[in-house]
Each structure stands twice: as C-alpha cells, then as structure tokens.
Length: 73
Image 1 (tube, rainbow, N blue to C red):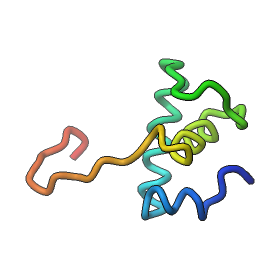
Image 2: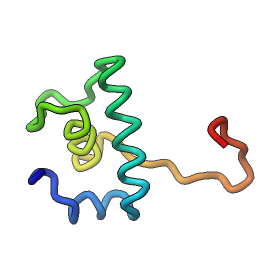
Image 3: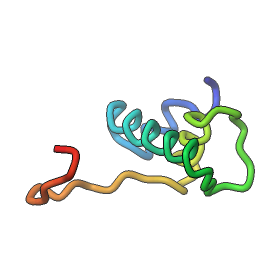
C-alpha cells in the first residue's frame, strides 16, 4: 500500500495498534452500512478507504475515559 503512507497516518493516530484497530472497525462499518464520508477514494478496498478517511481527517480516535466501563471490556 502506497497511499496513505504509514508516516502520515502515524501523525494522526499515535500508535500502530490503535491505527489498525480504528481502521479495522471502520472498514467493517463501511462494508456493512456503506456510509462513505468522502466523495472519492483512491483505494478500492474497505481497509484502504478507512485509512484514507483517517489521513484526510474525516475519521479520528477518541481518547478513552479512564473511569468509564466500555461494552467490549
């Protein structure tokens, strides 16, 4: 994968683990719901589209609240 580069994505989300997690969740959402946030994508695959959304600023990661209990825990 050439676009977007890992260096540019790491400026948006600070850890590779978080980047993969956010992109995977968004890719599944794109596949199921087809709710695209951008008009044009370079990539044909859902993971690539999710990474493009992160790169463009349409998708970001929320900070976790230390006191909150999340459903997936």
